[in-house]
Image 1 (tube, rainbow, N blue to C red):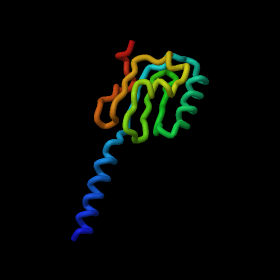
Image 2: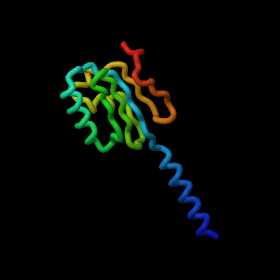
Image 3: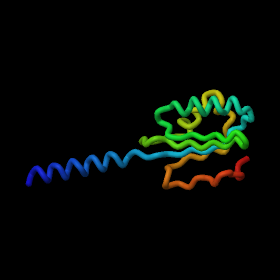
Image 4: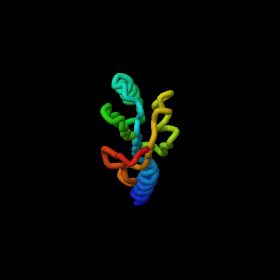
Length: 111
């Protein structure tokens, strides 16, 4: 009986701590029209172990990134993925995937 109680307790503790990680998304407008540059940036970001998915639409510059599960993800984390090209991003939106609303693609409410 004691073994079952300990096992149940360990299961509950494990469930509690595993729920602290979330999958985040980031969206932005990338103000670069050079398809070679956007493609190389996308390729480099794809190598990052914390990123599950990245798409940069070369035709309109819209960016969508989905992270692997992690505790937090900030605007600075998003911008750091782009290095010195971060200054070419605008209309940044970050949230928790499945909880916060994403902008519908293609979004046009960005200046």
